[in-house]
Length: 330
Ligand code: PMV
Image 1 (tube, rainbow, N blue to C red):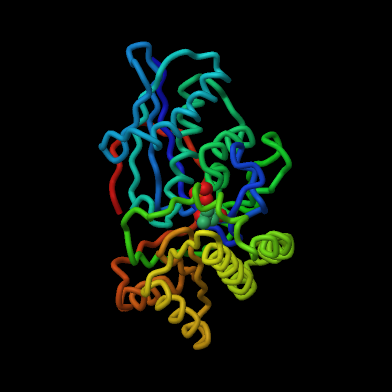
Image 2 (cartoon, rainbow, N blue to C red):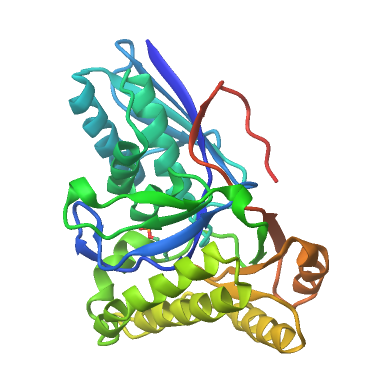
């Protein structure tokens, strides 16, 4: 029996990944930049054993079959190939945050799976190899392998499309207050969404302008310039959602409370607060701010009609191996 447990954090993208150049390998249409969320985590234990007949997956104690299990098995197949291993595996995973609601659960899920599965199989993959492996499960998962503030460079092939850290978590005490307006599973997952991106007439313009936004975002992070980050991250988020709303068929992830939070954040910024919003493929709004503003901001977000709860996180470290243990929910 070969077993290992890993923890990985989800990440929030300031420059978004939306659309693939190669769907199978998940080579993205454009580069992206994100921050890991240290308070949120996926803990995954992978056990390969000759006693196991077929791969199995449990998520927060519930047995999962179908497409989700197939996606996990596809990554396990890659690990089995690399390690020359013939055994099936059991995968037990738990999250301390809501799944499938625009809090990038697939990112932390596949980063933790790549690390736990490769370690259980006796492989010692370096960060680049792990990031590439995680990418094949879910694109944004490659950004949850390195720590802190992370950039995924597009690359041209499987070999050179991976993420690396721009700065460690300790570099900047930037906080994410996540206004949860709906914690249910989203109707259209991001894998399906990526395939629709090219059907929007706006996607080509979004992709063509990505190098400019990436450069501004890199500078903003390295210089801890929240005003510059606010400007470029909000524009990038709006561009991605414009593409979503204009693809065929269109994708509308926002709910009334999503827009209410957007307006409130813009108003608070006009009043002098250093805050900005960004939204992934779901209705929840990530509101970024300096550590000193977290308490007041969370309170104000909670008072907005339709906001059910506010999760909060500082920047997080890389995916890492740990001893197996029970997960606590935040
Ligand atoms: O990794 P995926 O296929 O779940 O795609 C993530 C897409 C967004 O979260 C909307 C943007 C991003 O860069 O994280």
